Image (tube, rainbow, N blue to C red; front, side, top):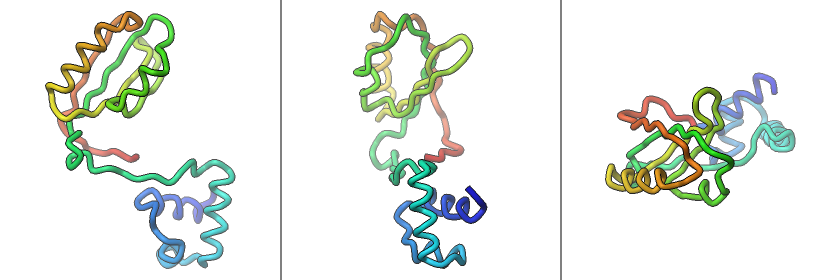
Length: 138
C-alpha cells in the first residue's frame, strides 16, 4: 500500500459512502484510478468491508464497560453472540480475554455482570467502566 492508497483509505475510514468522484477531487487522483485502487485494496484484503459508525448515544447504548476475564477452557460461540458484547480480544498476562460492552445504563450492565459471574467457565473477572470516550476509530 503506497501513500496514494493510504490517502484513499483514510478518506473511506471517515466516510465509507464517499463517492469515487469525491475521493478523486480530494486526492487529485483520477476517478478511474481511485476505483482501480479501491478494487485492488479489496482484492488484497486490506479493505475487509465497508461499514457504518453508529451514534451510540442516540441508540441509548452510551454506557461502556470493559471486562477482563480468565476462563476455564473455551467459551461457547453462543457467549460471543450476546449483542451487548461489541469487541473481544485475546490478551496476554493474568487474563485471557478483554471484552468491550455497551449498555443502556448501569442497571442493564449490572444484570449482565450477575449473569456473567454465574458462568462456570469464567474463573475471575476485572471490570472497568468508561467515563469518557476520547477516541474510537471503528
